[in-house]
Image 1 (cartoon, rainbow, N blue to C red):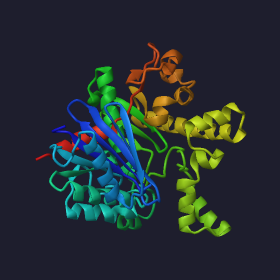
Image 2 (spheres, rainbow, N blue to C red):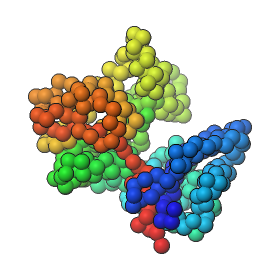
Image 3 (tube, rainbow, N blue to C red):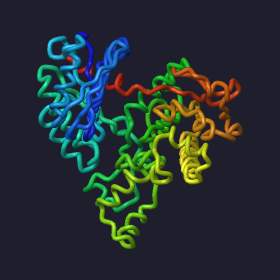
Length: 396
């Protein structure tokens, strides 16, 4: 285990963790702490193909990490004494301050907490997880890897909102973008799969999970992305609305008497697929569609329509397109979405091979026809590996 990196992704009531061998690219162990603060919490661990779990109260993130580390020690992975090289933390929002992996100091942690105003659903939990991990493992470097970092260099025309410039500057209002670790990793894997230099390629990457985002990547550098100041903008997501007329916010306040918190909850937690048809799991959505549920059919159509709009927009943004890639839970596993998103685009040089698209292979693979001018790929994302490799650079 010496030289491995512990990757931690802290949510408001959960902690995902993975022990990664950055050189081999393998996960030594992975698990999740769930239901933090509830009467009965749950810690799940997978190591060596064996699943173990522990149930019981988990008061806070520190206690959750202690239980996770105890379970790791029981299977022979004692983090405190086995010489792990670093701990990498996923942090959602870096604002304009953090645009590369950063070793965590008290000052850095304070700034991550301050940036919670830009990511109130994410950064507070990220900071809490960091605090707990530093207490448990004080003698190894802790490194923050930011979701927004890859999009820091978006050109001004893509990152700027057309609002009063003084208000925007004072309140740090700009397009930041998210899922950057995934988009950057996948773009590199596309180049490797095609046997090309990433600097030669113009790409569209579609990260389609419960949260979803699209990016336009020119020569390895992101030039546009669908998420904005927050992870709410852009594609239709599991529970988030994606693009919406900003006037809807004032309309709901004036006509429905909804306050800011109620509207925020509506757009982030009760919209997207869940708002349209009551479910946000794609397996459930497909089941409802198969029963003829009209709301589910409409939800799917809206989802694909928005996806096609971004593909078209980014094709124009890039001018020349070499590859379109699907990744994350829906992108990797739902062949219908891939087929429908690119249907009828043969005139633009984009053709999906039906047999390749529905094949059971789960690795990085081409799904376009041999005649397609644009390569279409499915590439499994691996944000944990990308975070581990970034964190390893800070190992003492």
